[in-house]
Image (cartoon, rainbow, N blue to C red; front, side, top):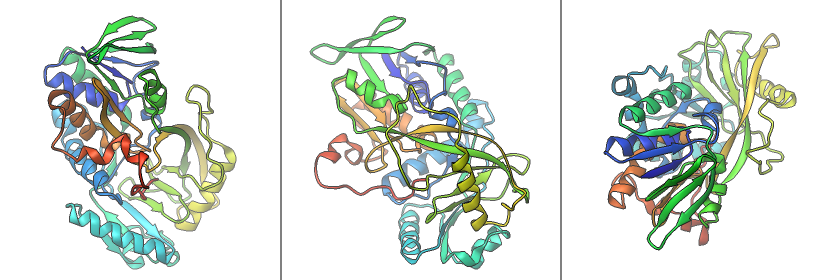
Length: 381
């Protein structure tokens, strides 16, 4: 039996790929499926990253998202409206140029754009504020809740078990690996344990005798009715210097997010405010108004929420068999939803073969934090 700890998108994608290969899998989720970080994600899917490893994870995953409805029978409302990254400072613009070169080297159809190009893409843009940016029309977004449903149904169809309201209390090891997982609903025998616990990853790692550098950080999202309705085919826009981003939601609304500096404490995933802060959304709207004419004085704050990013020091995940039979797929720093198809495949490869051909797993080993400073992902929203 393979026990997957966590019923978010990473755990479910891993369980699906394992069940699809004929393995007996059991998913244990402490509350309801997708109610951790997945529930509070905006659903972004992009390949515009600054590191080759994240680009590779995106390229594989986007191929899957594009055919998800055909393969899983669920429309996840996937829209490829594009992502536009904008740079107001020269140093940022140089970073964008370097990023585009790397992305193109790995097959991403992104391009460096001048301010006038950006204004053609989004006519209401205050293009005079920016020196340039990047754009990829293949980037987009989907509904994480629907993707959770798709994976969960496919797991059940393949004989996998999903248990909700089950909390992991301990992972018991024998000489060759895990023997059982002790839970609030009883013990489960396990030959493999997959840690896909999102913001609870460090806690589950601790049960396995591991010290994982994964820290929960609180991030906020607002639902805003702009003064000028935002088209559903307009791009997600990210001002790399201020940190504000916004993307189309429904009926002219936008989802708006970003971390604008200041205190960023570690968060207890069992005890944090899931509501948005009024001062944060006020600042977000002010920053957005500097980016686009859409956000005039008559823009309306409709609602919002807060969730958790499970962050590593370099904003790249840890994916590895850290000790025999115990696999970590954690620390996605806000990119777990978009990368879940690739991660599920990699986890299944590790169980089946002890390795994967999809990526160089040494890059995502937890041992990378023990030596010199490693290259970090810069394109973190």
